[in-house]
Length: 155
Length: 169
Image 1 (spheres, rainbow over the protein chains, first blue to last red):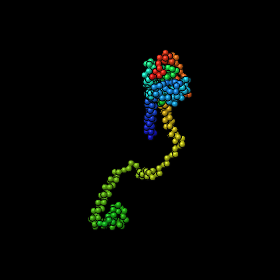
Image 2 (cartoon, chains in turn yellow, brown):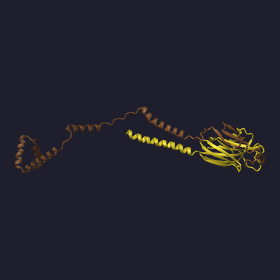
Image 3 (cartoon, rainbow over the protein chains, first blue to last red):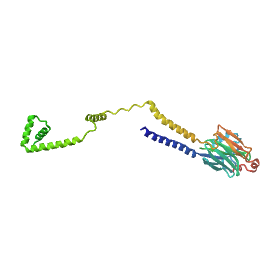
Image 4 (cartoon, rainbow over the protein chains, first blue to last red):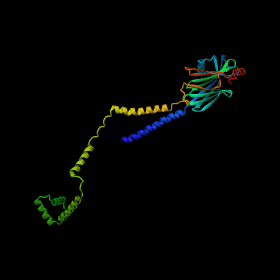
């Protein structure tokens, strides 16, 4: 009787082990990063320039920017791109004619971000970007204003 | 011939009658041819059966054979024994062993499939692999989970050439 039970039980455990390992592997392979990229314009004026219909930046992003050592009082959203990056792939988010962001999902929460300005790579950066965190790339713009590309991980 | 007369003949044949009754039957047989024929037939039948029984023998003694039958009847009539109570430790072990195995499998699955970057970076590690902008600096706000990379791009002379929003648009 015992001899019949052991092979059956062993088979069940072996199957369960395979299911657990395979399930974990599938989850890891299917890891997809969902991101939002914002092109922002910073100014001390309370309104966007004439002829532009920029919206004020979202409250949560405004709060994060407020905590950074940036002198500008108001931030306006010029463009927004939402995209998903499967593990091991690169996605290009075109923020404007002159600006694009390349994001590579390195697995886990690791990303490699390249900022392309006027066709040239300005910066390439590898870092972890857990859910809810944000990477902000920015610089000066004319008339004491600023530009930012904020990359926020949604999932 | 009635049934009692037939039985009487059978008893005579088997030697079960008293002497007086046996002599009566002998007289009866001398007078009645039918009775004599029946006795003859019974005698032949007995002889034939005796020959058959002689050929059949039990492999064991009669007493032993019947004792086996008796024991088998007693075994079938005996009440089924109650199952022995399972000790508490055995019950716990029965539950804990599979639970431990499942837990180990889950832990193994989590550990083996834990996402790690190809470079083996810890979550907090960060590297700038290429930086064309030598005037850039990085600021990290750990409480807000925000990293700022401030670039000197575009160059000041480019800034001067562009309108306010031309840089971003």
